[in-house]
Image (cartoon, rainbow, N blue to C red; front, side):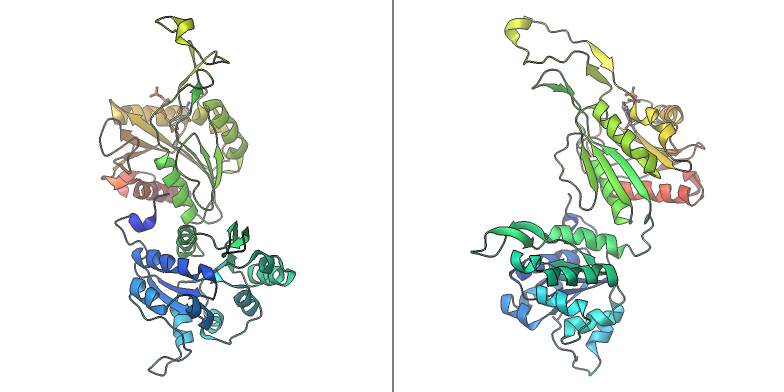
Length: 420
Ligand code: CTP
């Protein structure tokens, strides 16, 4: 949703990625991938097969990574390049991965530099296949992919359905987009032991819309960014994430189960269906507190209402309060409070009333925090009266700080921000 490449951070500094490029037309997209991985701070060593070099020139990759493209098994100083690249890599990505490469990888061949590095590495391996749809549908390709995934533990990403090479129309075989691959790289770089790996996380996000008639609704200015950031950060840390979102223009984050809903009552239903299996629940949605009691079945017209329209509103269910008892024992519940007055006092009251372990208090009415901006300035309150003031941060960074606190609670660490 917010391309990492646009963020003023280099979170992958010190991480080494080997990017294998094999001979398919999608190889041109891997230049973008190499660039994004580099901008995020990682050191990217591109290894091209001979066939890949027929599609794109090594110079393009060298231009975006600032490093020599590796093509030969032997480096100038006589050391075995495949061993050093394989040993030092934190992540091994092949994009595009052709049918031929998948066959060679599945059979443990070491007949060029790329397959040799693959055998020599113990880093997580991510393969993004791309080929003609008939080649993808071939049972031997299917068997090779299955072997790579189930026996060798490689992560297989895609392919997607879409437009193929010129003259081939559409079909299954298109490489997943570089931005999508970058997200998976982030999850794999966070380590096999991602700090939330094996945890199930449920997040609510966005506004809700309460219909007045078929074309009008009551809602609020929430964009959903804070909740989407929490969901994405949890996923990057290895969690299995479900995001229940009200109407938001943000695209579905990669890797996350997204359930789109309209009204508070729909959101309650979706949360009830998933909360019992969640160890961490983050209620970031700005739920509309009221809904029109009798939404009109047809568009309300001025000619019928005259110069005044009175609408009776009823109170919506409180999703956080109503699902508190459904969270499994030992689960961690996090709420948000956006307030115009008495911020900490009111946030503390909500924390107690709704049984949260943590509540994230943020002031409404500031230009750089709250609704519809990329940044936020929050205070995290805990059940023991501890408060932790955070500076102005990107919402992605705020999400990280919140999850740091959640992790420390899961580990039985100090809940109080004062000690952190
Ligand atoms: N919340 C919820 N369901 C609602 C209202 C709020 O789950 N119907 C959750 C929000 O997602 C948030 C927390 O409760 O985590 C506090 O929401 P907020 O809107 O600040 O508080 P309210 O309880 O609605 O109180 P008020 O609007 O009167 O301040």
